[in-house]
Structures are given as C-alpha cells and as structure tokens.
Image 1 (cartoon, rainbow, N blue to C red):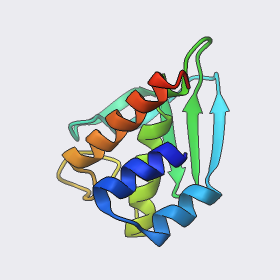
Image 2 (cartoon, one colour):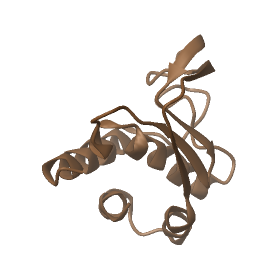
Image 3 (cartoon, one colour):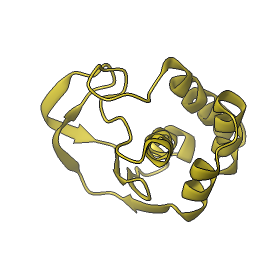
Image 4 (cartoon, helix red, strand yellow):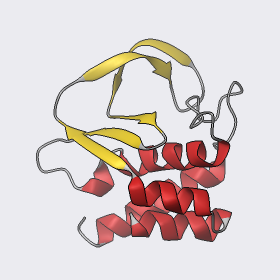
Length: 125
C-alpha cells in the first residue's frame, strides 16, 4: 500500500483524500470467479466479462487470488488506482478506464500501476 501511495504521490501529488482512503481501505481476497458486464481497459463495454478484481466502492475492493501468485501479479494495484480516483472524484472510480464516458484515468495512471507492480515484483511481493 505504501509503495502504491508513494508512486501515486510522485505522479499526481499528495492528496489527503487518497491517503485517507488507502489507509482505511477494505480488501477482500477470493478464489471464486466473478463476472458480469463492465468495461475493458480501452473503454469498450462488455457483457459476460470475467474479473480478476473489482472496485466495489471507494473503500472496498475485491481481488482474485491464484495459487503461487505474487501481489504484483494480481489486480490489487489496478484496483487501488480505481479507489484513489473515486476518493478524489467522489462519484466513481472511472470504470471505463481510458474510455470517454467517465473521466479520471489517464496514461499516467497506467504508469503508476506499472511502476508499483515492478517495484513489488523486485521485492518478491
């Protein structure tokens, strides 16, 4: 969480809303399959999608775990980005990512996710 927060603040600046949200976030880990309608990374709306993570509210995320998978290989950091955007906007976490319907997700968000996951993988986390 601290590695993510450091990367976020280096890219977007310090935010009391993001910091508070990250420190109080509930993370549910599960092995079950979850699916439904939602958006792909490019903003395409899809029916019958399978999820590896979900941001349910700004304060609650679900992350699928797989045997032997490191946190850096999971969707956790991706979901932290959605929760952080939600904490800032107050209305949503930009579910369509780079699509045109919601706003908040940028190419810089992708860099924060990538940089955080690379650091966690180097640490073996």
